[in-house]
Image (cartoon, rainbow, N blue to C red; front, top):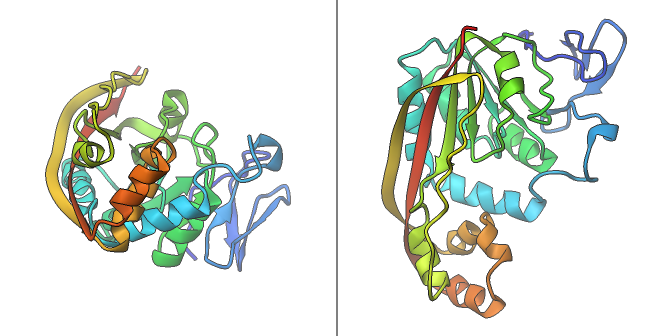
Length: 270
């Protein structure tokens, strides 16, 4: 069996897999789910009974990601990784694993792992990508050995710079993806009479040196059921009038744009 750098969320000792369970030397045990992920969030560390994206949002994400609308982003991340050590890669806040899966396919000899606070997301990811270890985990308390990762990816998820720095090796690479100000502006133009650009994300993680910023920007057309799924996986679904949602859901196709900033950082040496 392969060895993964997971650690016990209770005592922080290394976890070893035996059969369908992970064990640490202190006897703590974590069973693999039917789909193959392991839940490494302690009950008393949860902020709700079912944290993260719910089943409806995950179903929507699966449909959109399976349609390939975010493959160009994953391809850009893989292109960036070509220029840096990438024998171990953690996709933190991996969602349904679409980026994780493309990275693993591009670099089959690398140990690529995914974590997400949503067990619904981890379940969907593990069902599709059988050869990738996925865990349910908080990004602020990663059950991963210190200085074990060459690369950490965080796309559209909260950043916990101190924790990310802990799991990265000295000089390790942190890739952060944020929506550009024009991301999905075409969709917003259909939903709203006076659409606004996204706010510019100006956060810079402490303990990291920015190397460069690259961009992914192009148009795509969603059709059929994916039209409603595209909206359901965004906050717009919860902040739009019912009649406006129904109007767009009835559209046979919808052309909009994707626009991302891919920020590349290096872990500071000091």
